[in-house]
Structures are given as C-alpha cells and as structure tokens.
Length: 385
Image (spheres, rainbow, N blue to C red):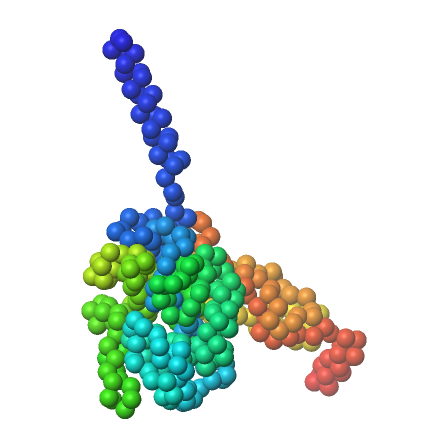
C-alpha cells in the first residue's frame, strides 16, 4: 500500500471510530452531567425542583437493600400527617415482626411500643422488625402494605420499581428492585414531611426508656456538614446503597448511590457527589410578590390587585446573578375578573434563553359594571358638586 493511501485509510478508520463513539455513548439530559463512579448507579437531584444534576445508569432496576424503607417511611409519614395514626399510638408486636432478621431492635412477640419509637428504630437503626410491625399496624398485613407500596410507587411515576417487602431483605425475594432515579423520586417525596428529617439527622438516640441505644447507620450524618439523612442499605445482592440528603446555602440535595463495593466507598462517593453539587450549582429563588394594580375597564372597581407566584430554578453558580426578569401584562383588564385568574406572566431569562416562568394572577375579583352601578356613580358625583 502506498504511503498516501495508507494515510487516507487510517484517517477514514479514525473518522468511523469517532462517529461510533458519538452515537454509541449514552448522553445526559439537558443541564445534567453523566458520571463515572465505582458503583452500579447514581443520581444527584435538587430536592425543591426535582432537577437531576448528575447521573450514572439512573434507570436500571437493582436490589436496593434497606433503602427500600424510604417507601415504607413515606407511607408511615403520610398516615401520621393525615391523622390516620399518631406518634403516641401503641403497637402490639406480632410473631412475624419479631422474627425478622438483619438489622433489628429485638422486638418480642406481644411487646407494645409507640409508633414514634418504632419510627425512630426504622430511620436511625434500619430495624427490620420495627418496619414490619408498623407495616402490619397500618395495613393489617405485610402483603397489603406491599400492595400499597407498589401503588404509591406507580402514582409517583417510579417506572422501574417493584417491591416485595417493606424491609429490603432479599434472601428470598425474586424481583424486589428499584432504580437510583426512582429512589431519588421517593426520597424527594418523603422529605416533604419535615418531621422525618428530625429523626434521620439524629446520630444517637434510644428507646425503651433509654435501655436500648440507637446509632445511625448513616455515618454522613456525623461526618458530612449539612447532611440531614436519609437511608442506607446493604446486602450481598445489593452491595452498599444510600439515599443521602443534605441542606446547604438554601439548597437541598439528594444523592443516591447503588451497588458500591464497600460502606466506605459508598460514603466517599456520596460525599464527592454532594460536594460537586454544592460547588457547581445554586438555587435561584424568586418569592411570591405583589405587583402594581392594573386598571380595569367596565369594572365595579377601577383597579385589580395582582401577584406573581413563587419561582425557583437550579443553575450553575456563576449564572445566578445574570438572571433577568420580564413581566408580560396587558395594558388593562376587562371586567369581569375572577380572583386567581391568570392575567399575565413573569418570565426568567439567562443569556436570552427562558429558564422558566410563573403566572401573574388577580388577587381579587372585579365584577362587571351594571347600568344601576353607573346610575349610582352619576348620583354620587352629582351630590358632591
């Protein structure tokens, strides 16, 4: 082969290789960065907006171990906050609950324990026996509770999840799986119940009037500044998993790691990913606010008060100061105007590109001026002359 022909052939092969890599490699969604950490999957999500900032194999269904209990805790917190059960309720432990292995607080059949102590045992110590006791208390049986878990997962759009138990024990489980993305979704929903963070951020506590100590399985609570929880898990099938939540600089992050090789590796990955989030992103927040009233034609009132809704968006840190606001409103409104009616829009732009918007709404109703209203106005003016 001649030298020039060889060079042309080599160049052509390099071009084909480049094109193959461009089309074959997975790409991250807009505004999201792909990752390559020593774990099976990973997701970093900003909690208030649900925006994913970093991901690695986010949608593969994998065994989650005790991170399963995020959904168990979500159903418990929804029952508490709706008033169906209370923290002071006394739960009688069944033989089934008392028989659970793995992490436990050694409940005895017939023992009574308050919902709050069982809740703490699940959140802090990852107690399987406490999880089953509360599952049975809420739904009547473990199978009925698991049905509720899967129903709630479906309602949240958790497309790669199937639960078989409320604990994450997987020795006999056949298809007990979820994904890093789905864990982030249910974690985001759980931390809307602020009480859970009061428990998940505790390092050490106790139950049985101080006789039994609880130590948090999540070491980040003690060793990572700003960590607020949330749930760890590990089995031989699942490896080492975590859904770690943190709050810094007004921004709440959720970091999910699945399938790490060791506990320390899992924790280091979570710390690095959280550090990445806080180093590179910030939350732009615009609070709900009142605007100048707008004139109303043909209304019983001359003006209608207005307000814009709250808005937030996650952006690279350096872009926060560059966000611009633009208000779009008509020059006037025509009666009638209903309270809560959207009459305009407040938009937010970065470098000429819209990053989001919220409606501008009327905060009072303005009725249409009738003939009798007009007569009243005429007489009122005449009396003042």
